Image (cartoon, rainbow over all chains, first blue to last red; front, side, top):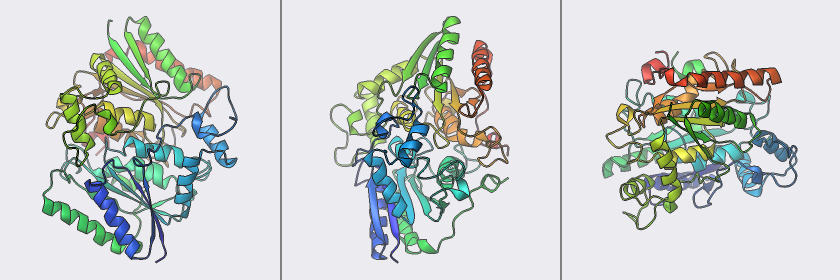
Amino acid sequence: LGKKVLIVYAHQEPRSFNGCLKKVAVETLSKQGCTVTVSDLYAMDFEPRATRNDITGALSNPEVFSYGVEAYEACKKRCLTSDIVDEQKKVQEADLVIFQFPLYWFSVPAILKGWMDRVLCQGFAFDLPGFYDSGFLKGKLALLSITTGGTAEMYTKTGVSGDFKYFLWPLQHGTLHFCGFKVLAPQISFAPETASEEERKQMMASWAQRLETIWKEVPIPCTPPWYFGQ
Amino acid sequence: LGKKVLIVYAHQEPRSFNGCLKKVAVETLSKQGCTVTVSDLYAMDFEPRATRNDITGALSNPEVFSYGVEAYEACKKRCLTSDIVDEQKKVQEADLVIFQFPLYWFSVPAILKGWMDRVLCQGFAFDLPGFYDSGFLKGKLALLSITTGGTAEMYTKTGVSGDFKYFLWPLQHGTLHFCGFKVLAPQISFAPETASEEERKQMMASWAQRLETIWKEVPIPCTPPWYFGQ
């Protein structure tokens, strides 16, 4: 009730299965009275490259360019380019950030990786110290909603691609947990392209149904020994 | 002797530690008589976004755009955009591909993720079936040369960031092994920014020294149960 949700959405085609999952999330959460904002990265032609252009005005070291150092300084001096600041404001206001994307190479598409590289900079999302449980985005929730090409069987411990938890590690622990987010269980829609129409409807319905009670969910543990079952 | 090496390099600053590691690799391998090609992604302003622009001419399904489907068709019909084809030719000719980059969020920078997303398309790097050990790039070697912000202690099994093998999984298994590459042990230069000048020189020297005998190395096993020590 009155919660704010940001959906960071990375698919080129509104009529895709990803597009439908995004639409269902907007509708279901809005009906609950949530305020939902969508960052439609391809429609925005979002810039993925981390370059000098991200810093407006003078560099702190013009001789040898270090993106991390300059972005940190620019963040403190409010000299980051406006497309980054706009996204940071959306994150800042959100209680929950949902990432909706197709799995590309066991990870996010480059356009979404660029969002992570550029938006979640030092000074905004974390500091050193000030990461993992003390990351600056603590108190917020994050959830990865992913479609895959491979089937659920491929993504098991003994399957050819290994447990899906393995490929989630850099995203859930290395990125989201690092910034202080509490991570909700991932929503993985396996192989919608080879599924039947009935199966796709089922995947869509289970996402909508889950979102009805999303605020009652308990975050998953996200630390190394648990994570790999060791 | 007469071997061909492609270095895919993703750093904004030639005078950076990454730039130096790249330079040392070019020099050391050239001296051995190798032909070395560098794809300097930031200098090329390489496009990371996977979009409709990657396909020249008509789409096979203009109603609902699927990047994977269209890139596959365009690859077969030789209708991929020239920046992709140029990179594919470099990969095709290489015996060894070295990726030189700073770790961004437990992974590659977005510009390099975009290289993977766009260059390693179905029809070129793999097919279904035709992946993992039968990926189309079988017979080639790949090596990740990475610099980190965090220290070596952080990237251990009981460290805050977990074993570095965990974050390498999506890259070494999910991407390189999927395409058929045999993967050489990663070269990880931990925390060069906080290291002393002496330590940096040492990291540089050990990379140069390793490259002297790189062709004698045996690839690492890259399958799920071994990988996570289970």
